[in-house]
Length: 274
Ligand SMILES: NC(=O)c1ccc[n+]([C@@H]2O[C@H](COP(=O)([O-])OP(=O)(O)OC[C@H]3O[C@@H](n4cnc5c(N)ncnc54)[C@H](OP(=O)(O)O)[C@@H]3O)[C@@H](O)[C@H]2O)c1
Image (cartoon, rainbow, N blue to C red; front, side):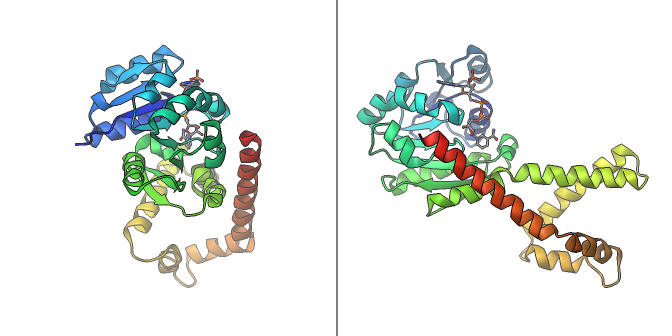
């Protein structure tokens, strides 16, 4: 059982998922504190998980070994300034899950010399099936790395990056990625309906096919290209469909979409860091 105390600043969707995951993993509720500006999410978290709650961010940060910043990127600068003095006194591990806030900017707002782990989770974290990339600055020790990883693992897969600049590519791939798959699902479902399937039938077949393909790819030792080739018989229906997608430039389109998202992520980080 962990002896670390953890304070979440911001008790919204992501904090809710992380706390739920931590409690399910056996983290003691008595070691978890959450602050928010609104009483409703705090009352809900206290009732559901038995965690301590409050509205004083500075006090919450003063009493914690780990501070998870789970507020929107736009309010991060304000929140960091509020807890800067606590961070300079106690030197907790700071974990930021905010999209687009670079660790150097956060460190500056917190007064400097902080151990910071910056994470990029994605929305499936809300159903404990997220994919999170983590980056640790040079002040983070091995034990703190393990701690950060164990916290984010509560909501899904975790992977470390050695180069923070790659966070923009992660944002483009897995951060925005759920929306790409939702779009493909929408398109498949609509095409199924156009071919005469009842709407609900098209929807269920689409969702289960997406889930089954992801599960197969995750559980297989083969890469996606091999799995695709294996279900593509020469002269068959799949081959005919894939040729249409290739001729239409699907791969180039995906590459352009990710580049656009990566570039936008850089722009936002530049704006938010000012
Ligand atoms: N949701 C995701 O799947 C996802 C994925 C990747 C990254 N993220 C990142 O995770 C962070 C949190 O996202 P979320 O979806 O959990 O947002 P959220 O549901 O809006 O939660 C943030 C909470 O923080 C509260 N808050 C605002 N200012 C505060 C302050 N000064 N002190 C304490 N609490 C304050 C907000 O209250 P108000 O509503 O009154 O402002 C809100 O309840 C964001 O930075 C986001 O970029 C989220």
